[in-house]
Length: 360
Image (cartoon, rainbow, N blue to C red; front, side, top):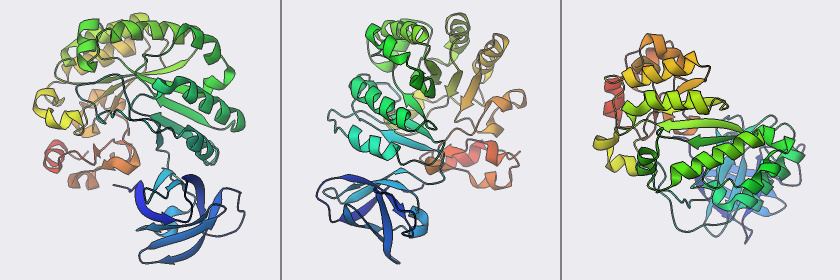
């Protein structure tokens, strides 16, 4: 796993954002240049003072945009140079309690929107920035304001925001019609075609009805939406029905991502009751993919290693797992399709991963 948080010491008292440089050439006002490096780590100096970072070389950090947190004694690598997989965690609060949540919510919230906005302005050209939580739209005005400010100053940047879709209101429609939001896509989960099952999975009565209202508002606003469905024991057989519903009522979505379960968070303790081995029960997934293709909905499989998918459907399985949390089984080393494959999450049990793969 690529480390995103490292121990660090800094001169400053308050948290700040800086971009790390291995040389002092072409320094910007928020850049920090390398001043010292040894086997234990690297030290950089900028307008906010010195920061010494443990365990990473200047080469590994060069170009990274980091959040320095002096009181916590650490830095967060918000944007890693050269990586296409950078996501900002804007809150750990959430108003749903999904049975398979990969990042169980917390009750507290620390507002970092101003710092994250500064960081976004320092990203490399043509960046796609992920935004996640918790539930980002619990702080909807702060979120939308940050997106608007960054998009107006960086015309090359795009955002992908993961949200449960519970908080889009009628008065958001006009705001979301602003052309800058054509560079924002909203990743929204839908787990079933009817309220009882969806609400049961997300742990919130009325969530399905509220989501229906939000979809209507997003359609009127011309918003870009990626639909997401995690496959678990309770909804796998309902996938064909959901596919028919998506094709009939939600054809405006840019993509429908059907996702395999992560072995982390709530799912880790409920693995036996939640996890579905798609190698043995692929028929409902296949039916959903067939119906989507027939009606022009672009479906894709996330977190499905390509060798575990029947050949006819292998093209739907994409390299979906971010580089910092992706691993491959030992047998994958000889696979000719490894670069196009999702692999496994770092926290997926090694024994299960080794048993699942058959190199192509």
